[in-house]
Length: 122
Image 1 (spheres, rainbow, N blue to C red):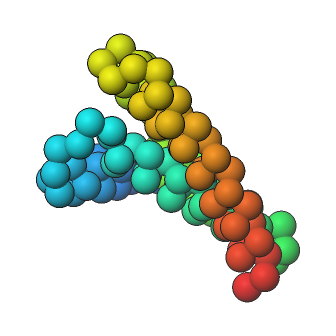
Image 2: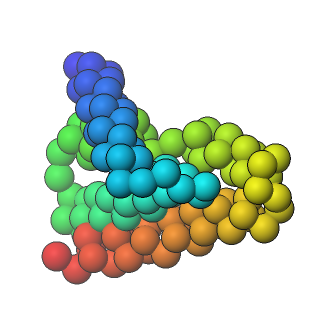
């Protein structure tokens, strides 16, 4: 049963990513793909929050897996961020590519930490 719940939540996360990326993309065409960067940083915060909450408060393990592995796993996308960084390297050069890749990495780490802290504190 947990496999089904994780799968459904993974699909929901992927749909949420698609819709949010489309929404951000409609706000203007940019050389830097802001949508994927925002989604990965937000997803890191959400997973950090879920992890912090469950570490401090406990709860249903199936729900934690469905939200963390399922939804957050479907919502975030390392492969798309990697391909976008490679495209930037090819089209815009090393500086834009490095800024994109490092920005996602640093932003994701910082917001995951913030999510853990906030989830633990509430």
